[in-house]
Structures are given as structure tokens and as C-alpha cells.
Length: 116
Image 1 (tube, rainbow, N blue to C red):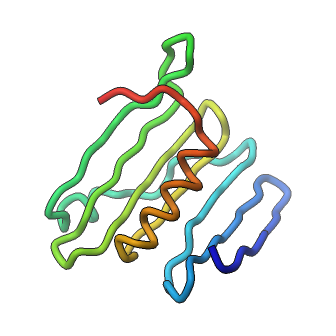
Image 2: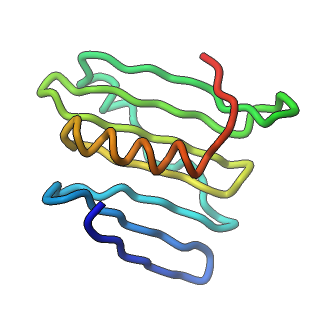
């Protein structure tokens, strides 16, 4: 990672994390009013491949959803929404190398059991 920026509002905190010279940051959102509002249907339609998983707590309840894929032009995207935890993480239009770095951040922040 090369840089990060913190933005605050009354209802949420947003962190923008950038990887080297990639133009698109990883967006991390936390707060009581954060919900998965960004539609990813257009990304799915433009994707050569994608996968979708539900995220479960250790008790087995669904607490979020994780979708990721690669568009036909070879760029990566991911949308991980955790309504039960008031959090969200998103990126799109980035290189595979940046996606691997961003995925490590998302996965380490969310050490949760996932199922397909």
C-alpha cells in the first residue's frame, strides 16, 4: 500500500487506500448508516467471470455478502458488504496485482467463515 486517506461524516467513516500508482482506491466504510448501496449488476454483466458468497458469523448467521470478479478487459472488482457489522469494502477497475493487495486488507479485516 502506498497511501491512505480518512474521511469522516457524522454517520460514517470512509478510508481510501491506494496501491502504488493504481488510480482506483480501496474504499472502506464503517458506521451505523453504512449499507451495501452500490449496485454491482453492471459489473457482473461486464464480467468474464465472477463469484458470490455469503459471509457467516461463527454462530452461522448471515452477516454479509462478498462478490468479486474480472471484467472482460481484465480489470478486477470486489464488493464486500457487512450490514450486520455496519461496514463495507469496495474496489473496481484495478489491476490483478492491486486486487491481491486490496483483498489481503479486506480479508484480514474480516476474519469470518465464508460459504458459497
